[in-house]
Figure: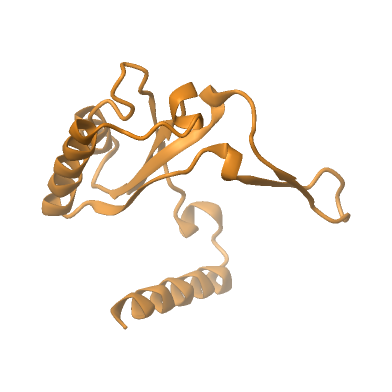
Amino acid sequence: MRFMMIVKATTDSEAGAMPSQELIDAMQKYNEELVKAGVLLAADGLQPSSNGIRISYPDPGDKPKVVDGPFTEAKEMIAGYTLIDVKSREEAIEWALRMPDPHGFGQGEIELRQVYEAADLTDNTESLAKEAALRQQLEEQKIR
């Protein structure tokens, strides 16, 4: 089961404030634990929304709308994420609880969400086969 730990943004992260060395060290130690356990798939911080772009589809069939950041409501933004592959929801919660305060100032908030698997979305064998082939291509690209 894949889960994404979504680190919510704060006014500091949206302002581009860099983490302390102490926090960087704590996050590296945490990520090392995830790697040693064999559950880490990806983990990255995101630049502030001032460097972001939003693409929306307000009218069906029309061209998408492109808007440059910054965006408002920092508490609804994402400052980073960690993607893990675990055996259960409980294990995902355990890992999320072990993450250091992601902003280091007591403002951290993590949202934990399970990732859909292709079989959760469809039972169409052709679609499932295409999805499996794409995932295989990705794995082969990683090996190169």
